[in-house]
Image (tube, rainbow, N blue to C red; front, side):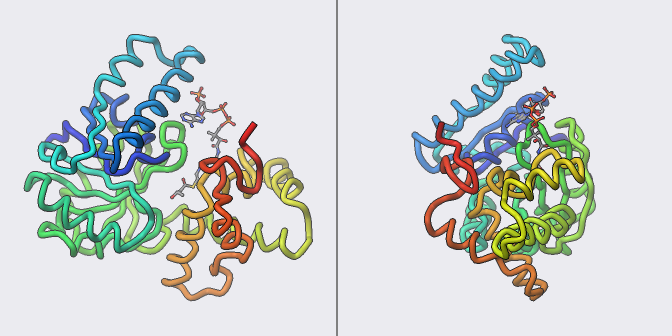
Length: 284
Ligand code: 3HC
């Protein structure tokens, strides 16, 4: 089966980044957002991201316009009725995603792959809320999706080999480096990354060093492009807490329980870049 038309559900940072990757690779993309204003915000974010690439000489204006022309924003889920592959990228909440997969199963064509961009949640649970568990898998992009090379292809127990092969071919067509991974909380990257990010917050809580010095240390000492607090702000503290909770629920390791500071900051709506303030201030 040739994947031609992509549906993306969710128009946040990841949804719009995935839409950009797919449209830049030549796919027709339909992004479903819950409201008109969030759909418009997604198109504006996409245009801004492409404009940045034009300014840097990575893309010419005609290519930018062609990419934008391949992305359509809609609010009705029914508009995904002719997609060959739908990638869900909504909030990291299992109940919300379960409900969405049941709806997607109703609207998407029988041959379509239904994929989730979840960071940690069990993909098999979403598969079992559809009538086509063999056509469900994870396609996990990283943030910022247009810049990060990796895509984890997550194989739940229920997936057919052809589904994994087609999902892998899609990631390759997007110019990404796919790796296939079994359906375990955190897959590869988040299973390794989030214990480290949580430990960094605990180190700060213990007064061992300031967040600025911890960030400097990990950049200068390990060559990481961002320190742990900068990265938590990029990912979003709400998403980070959800990822840690999912890791903790599966492994019951005390080190994986979200650090208290993370929970308090989420309660205070200090979510990182997306809310303008997290460990650092992005409002200026
Ligand atoms: N959208 C599109 N492209 C972007 C971008 C964005 N938001 N931000 C940066 N880029 C591109 C730039 O255009 C540039 O591309 P080019 O080399 O082709 O011109 C390249 O990335 C480098 O960007 P900059 O020079 O502006 O900035 P930096 O060198 O500081 O890089 C960064 C920015 C790519 C974000 C880098 O800091 C980085 O790699 N950080 C680590 C990010 C990371 O670890 N992400 C994974 C998070 S975990 C995750 O996503 C899992 C999820 O489940 C939570």
